[in-house]
Image (spheres, protein in one colour):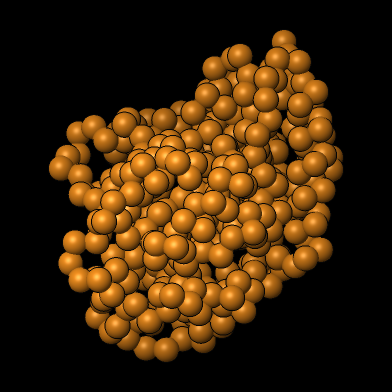
Length: 388
Ligand SMILES: *Cc1c(COP(=O)(O)O)cnc(C)c1O
């Protein structure tokens, strides 16, 4: 099928929810991808922070295929080795006590919301159900996670939304002003991804943590995008020196397969009992085998490499003329320029560089294994497009 035929079929048969870029990605290796017609691209998107080690990674593929050769799915009525192994790894690496597996970021957050409300119900009875999230946040596309998302543009059409969410400024004062006797949890992204690659202030986050502890509010950290090495730590909360009660993650966890995880720390380890929550596909053995392979390689050394690459990109990107600011953490980087972000992304694509946007910013989320030559290519293309 030619690209034009593909585009026509997509338009005819696929629901119009995506404003796609004009390329059909067909194969690749690491951060170098090719369209069906053989044009080469350097990938600074990783399928939105999903392909942690890029395309076609040999070690990851071996783990996935090995599991595929055994059994592809068993359901959660039975035990499977990869799921238990992955839960063990996640708990060992983070200090979490228990894990619930799902298939996506939204589901990982749904689980976190249910767990926070159940924790409060068990301890305080009915009525303490409110969750404070942040203005400009993004937590997913289901009705509950849209309700948790603090952006008005997300709250058109699909009402009524779920009750019990308040949107605060990302400061202690902001949280306190929204807090009431009905509050059970505070949920936040430490670097707002979709909201424009905005890191929260470390001191404010620490103060919020203290406030949560004093008032027995669960601190839920949405690490769907920031997790799994993306920021140069295994999870971004490590930078902030805080101890969350619940962490949700997904995107990069399984290196390209759909998998969500909700991590429960001490307070809410036993909040769920049999029947309280579940998922047919969640914790699928193939996805879990992929995730075990990814996690086993997110070593201290690899994370240090990510930090080094991040510093290199921050330095060179901030020198580009017409770049007003460079924000983010690790290999999650936002560029503010005076040009419309979508135009910049389309021009980059024409020149063989895949970048993303977030609000008015260019968003860069390369595979963690991005090479120096690939970074230099990206810097050069961004320089051409932005400074022209
Ligand atoms: C992408 C994202 C989600 C939603 O994840 P899906 O897998 O698309 O459901 C939730 N929270 C954050 C912070 C995200 O970046």
